[in-house]
Length: 116
Length: 110
Image 1 (spheres, chains in turn cyan, red):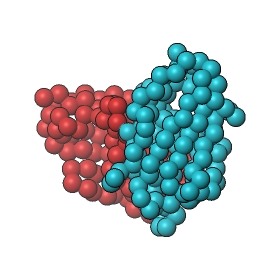
Image 2 (cartoon, chains in turn orange, blue):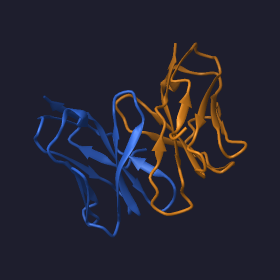
Image 3 (tube, chains in turn blue, green):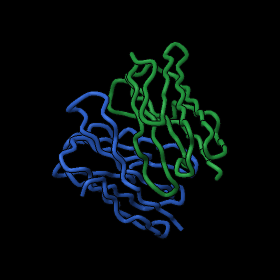
Image 4 (cartoon, helix red, strand yellow):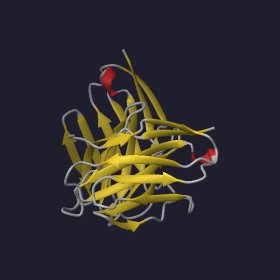
Protein backbone atom coordinates (compact mmCIF):
# COMPACT_ATOMS: atom_id res chain seq x y z
CA UNK A 1 0.00 0.00 0.00
CA UNK A 2 0.91 3.63 -0.24
CA UNK A 3 1.02 4.39 3.46
CA UNK A 4 2.17 2.91 6.74
CA UNK A 5 -0.11 0.11 7.86
CA UNK A 6 -0.50 -1.04 11.45
CA UNK A 7 -2.41 -4.00 12.81
CA UNK A 8 -4.43 -4.64 14.77
CA UNK A 9 -6.12 -1.23 15.12
CA UNK A 10 -7.42 -2.18 18.54
CA UNK A 11 -6.15 -4.75 20.98
CA UNK A 12 -7.60 -5.66 24.34
CA UNK A 13 -5.60 -7.97 26.57
CA UNK A 14 -5.71 -9.10 30.14
CA UNK A 15 -2.93 -8.07 32.46
CA UNK A 16 -0.09 -10.55 32.19
CA UNK A 17 -0.73 -11.56 28.59
CA UNK A 18 1.78 -11.04 25.80
CA UNK A 19 0.84 -8.92 22.79
CA UNK A 20 2.40 -8.35 19.35
CA UNK A 21 1.81 -5.26 17.27
CA UNK A 22 2.67 -5.15 13.59
CA UNK A 23 3.89 -2.32 11.38
CA UNK A 24 4.17 -2.38 7.61
CA UNK A 25 6.17 0.71 6.55
CA UNK A 26 6.17 2.48 3.23
CA UNK A 27 8.02 0.35 0.71
CA UNK A 28 11.66 1.32 0.42
CA UNK A 29 11.75 3.39 3.59
CA UNK A 30 14.99 2.77 5.41
CA UNK A 31 14.00 4.13 8.80
CA UNK A 32 11.28 2.83 11.08
CA UNK A 33 10.24 4.27 14.42
CA UNK A 34 7.95 3.14 17.20
CA UNK A 35 6.27 5.64 19.50
CA UNK A 36 3.95 5.38 22.47
CA UNK A 37 1.23 7.99 22.81
CA UNK A 38 -0.74 8.45 26.00
CA UNK A 39 -4.15 10.10 25.87
CA UNK A 40 -3.86 13.83 25.36
CA UNK A 41 -0.08 13.74 24.99
CA UNK A 42 2.44 13.84 22.21
CA UNK A 43 4.24 10.71 21.06
CA UNK A 44 7.13 9.38 23.09
CA UNK A 45 10.00 7.72 21.24
CA UNK A 46 10.44 4.00 21.86
CA UNK A 47 12.89 2.63 19.31
CA UNK A 48 14.45 3.17 15.89
CA UNK A 49 15.50 0.82 13.10
CA UNK A 50 17.67 1.55 10.11
CA UNK A 51 16.88 -1.34 7.80
CA UNK A 52 17.10 -4.43 10.02
CA UNK A 53 19.45 -2.86 12.55
CA UNK A 54 17.95 -1.57 15.78
CA UNK A 55 20.11 1.49 16.32
CA UNK A 56 18.35 2.90 19.34
CA UNK A 57 16.10 1.25 21.89
CA UNK A 58 16.62 3.78 24.63
CA UNK A 59 12.94 4.67 24.81
CA UNK A 60 11.67 1.19 25.57
CA UNK A 61 10.14 1.46 29.07
CA UNK A 62 11.30 -1.92 30.35
CA UNK A 63 12.75 -5.23 29.28
CA UNK A 64 9.18 -6.44 28.74
CA UNK A 65 9.22 -4.45 25.49
CA UNK A 66 10.95 -5.93 22.48
CA UNK A 67 10.98 -4.84 18.83
CA UNK A 68 12.34 -6.49 15.73
CA UNK A 69 12.58 -5.86 12.00
CA UNK A 70 14.32 -8.98 10.76
CA UNK A 71 14.23 -8.34 7.01
CA UNK A 72 14.34 -4.59 7.08
CA UNK A 73 10.69 -4.10 6.19
CA UNK A 74 7.87 -5.25 8.50
CA UNK A 75 8.42 -4.63 12.20
CA UNK A 76 6.83 -6.15 15.28
CA UNK A 77 6.63 -4.60 18.72
CA UNK A 78 6.12 -7.21 21.40
CA UNK A 79 5.11 -6.54 24.97
CA UNK A 80 5.43 -9.38 27.44
CA UNK A 81 3.49 -9.74 30.69
CA UNK A 82 1.44 -6.65 29.96
CA UNK A 83 0.64 -4.19 32.73
CA UNK A 84 -2.15 -1.62 32.94
CA UNK A 85 0.30 1.21 32.44
CA UNK A 86 1.08 -0.24 28.99
CA UNK A 87 -2.36 0.94 27.83
CA UNK A 88 -1.71 3.55 25.12
CA UNK A 89 -1.69 4.07 21.40
CA UNK A 90 1.39 2.62 19.73
CA UNK A 91 2.38 4.48 16.59
CA UNK A 92 4.73 3.36 13.88
CA UNK A 93 6.38 5.75 11.45
CA UNK A 94 8.76 5.36 8.55
CA UNK A 95 10.95 7.74 6.62
CA UNK A 96 13.48 7.72 3.88
CA UNK A 97 16.10 9.16 6.28
CA UNK A 98 19.05 8.68 6.22
CA UNK A 99 18.97 8.77 2.45
CA UNK A 100 18.52 12.51 2.78
CA UNK A 101 18.44 15.03 5.62
CA UNK A 102 15.35 16.66 7.04
CA UNK A 103 12.95 13.96 6.01
CA UNK A 104 9.41 13.93 7.41
CA UNK A 105 8.08 10.84 9.10
CA UNK A 106 5.01 9.05 7.78
CA UNK A 107 2.74 7.57 10.40
CA UNK A 108 0.32 4.70 10.56
CA UNK A 109 -3.01 5.09 12.37
CA UNK A 110 -1.66 3.26 15.40
CA UNK A 111 -2.74 0.36 17.56
CA UNK A 112 -4.85 1.27 20.58
CA UNK A 113 -3.86 -1.14 23.32
CA UNK A 114 -6.06 -1.58 26.36
CA UNK A 115 -4.92 -3.74 29.24
CA UNK A 116 -7.68 -4.90 31.56
CA UNK B 1 10.63 13.28 27.94
CA UNK B 2 9.05 15.96 25.81
CA UNK B 3 11.00 18.95 24.63
CA UNK B 4 8.35 21.06 22.96
CA UNK B 5 5.54 22.90 24.61
CA UNK B 6 2.61 24.04 22.56
CA UNK B 7 0.56 27.03 23.48
CA UNK B 8 -2.36 27.22 23.86
CA UNK B 9 -3.33 23.72 24.95
CA UNK B 10 -6.73 24.21 23.36
CA UNK B 11 -8.14 26.74 20.91
CA UNK B 12 -11.72 27.16 19.72
CA UNK B 13 -12.49 29.61 16.88
CA UNK B 14 -15.17 30.31 14.29
CA UNK B 15 -14.83 28.95 10.80
CA UNK B 16 -13.11 31.48 8.58
CA UNK B 17 -10.98 32.95 11.37
CA UNK B 18 -7.22 32.50 11.62
CA UNK B 19 -5.69 30.12 14.15
CA UNK B 20 -2.26 30.64 15.66
CA UNK B 21 -0.41 28.04 17.70
CA UNK B 22 2.98 28.41 19.31
CA UNK B 23 5.72 25.96 20.16
CA UNK B 24 8.73 26.43 22.40
CA UNK B 25 11.66 24.07 22.70
CA UNK B 26 14.77 23.74 24.82
CA UNK B 27 17.80 22.55 22.87
CA UNK B 28 19.42 23.40 19.54
CA UNK B 29 17.74 21.90 16.51
CA UNK B 30 18.34 20.97 12.88
CA UNK B 31 14.71 21.42 11.96
CA UNK B 32 11.26 21.81 13.43
CA UNK B 33 8.23 20.02 12.04
CA UNK B 34 4.50 20.49 12.49
CA UNK B 35 2.09 17.58 12.36
CA UNK B 36 -1.68 17.27 12.52
CA UNK B 37 -3.54 14.43 14.21
CA UNK B 38 -7.22 13.83 13.69
CA UNK B 39 -9.00 11.95 16.46
CA UNK B 40 -8.13 8.26 16.41
CA UNK B 41 -5.70 8.61 13.55
CA UNK B 42 -1.97 8.83 13.03
CA UNK B 43 0.01 12.02 12.61
CA UNK B 44 0.19 13.76 9.25
CA UNK B 45 3.22 15.82 8.35
CA UNK B 46 2.33 19.43 7.53
CA UNK B 47 5.50 21.39 7.15
CA UNK B 48 9.22 21.26 7.98
CA UNK B 49 11.29 24.35 8.62
CA UNK B 50 15.07 24.15 8.79
CA UNK B 51 17.04 25.92 11.48
CA UNK B 52 18.43 28.44 8.95
CA UNK B 53 14.93 29.39 7.73
CA UNK B 54 12.74 32.00 9.36
CA UNK B 55 9.43 31.55 7.60
CA UNK B 56 7.77 28.99 5.38
CA UNK B 57 4.41 28.77 3.64
CA UNK B 58 2.34 25.87 2.43
CA UNK B 59 -1.16 26.65 1.18
CA UNK B 60 -3.06 28.14 4.12
CA UNK B 61 -0.25 27.34 6.53
CA UNK B 62 2.46 29.75 7.60
CA UNK B 63 5.24 28.68 9.95
CA UNK B 64 7.80 30.94 11.56
CA UNK B 65 10.92 29.96 13.46
CA UNK B 66 12.92 32.08 15.88
CA UNK B 67 15.96 30.12 16.96
CA UNK B 68 17.14 32.90 19.29
CA UNK B 69 13.92 32.49 21.28
CA UNK B 70 13.68 28.76 20.63
CA UNK B 71 10.13 29.16 19.43
CA UNK B 72 7.95 28.55 16.39
CA UNK B 73 4.43 29.46 15.40
CA UNK B 74 1.92 27.84 13.07
CA UNK B 75 -0.73 30.05 11.50
CA UNK B 76 -3.71 28.54 9.73
CA UNK B 77 -5.57 31.13 7.71
CA UNK B 78 -9.26 31.05 6.76
CA UNK B 79 -9.92 28.03 8.98
CA UNK B 80 -12.31 25.29 7.94
CA UNK B 81 -14.21 22.68 9.92
CA UNK B 82 -11.85 20.07 8.50
CA UNK B 83 -8.95 21.78 10.30
CA UNK B 84 -10.35 20.54 13.61
CA UNK B 85 -7.55 18.35 14.98
CA UNK B 86 -4.61 18.33 17.38
CA UNK B 87 -1.44 20.00 16.17
CA UNK B 88 2.01 18.97 17.35
CA UNK B 89 5.44 20.43 16.89
CA UNK B 90 8.45 18.14 16.81
CA UNK B 91 12.11 19.02 16.79
CA UNK B 92 15.00 17.10 15.30
CA UNK B 93 18.32 17.79 16.91
CA UNK B 94 20.87 16.24 14.56
CA UNK B 95 19.97 12.59 14.87
CA UNK B 96 16.93 10.73 13.72
CA UNK B 97 14.88 11.32 16.85
CA UNK B 98 11.90 13.65 16.91
CA UNK B 99 11.08 15.21 20.26
CA UNK B 100 7.42 16.13 20.58
CA UNK B 101 5.30 18.61 22.45
CA UNK B 102 1.95 17.84 24.05
CA UNK B 103 -0.04 19.45 21.26
CA UNK B 104 -2.69 22.11 20.73
CA UNK B 105 -6.26 20.91 20.32
CA UNK B 106 -7.95 23.09 17.69
CA UNK B 107 -11.73 23.20 17.31
CA UNK B 108 -13.29 25.05 14.41
CA UNK B 109 -16.91 25.97 15.03
CA UNK B 110 -19.16 26.11 11.95
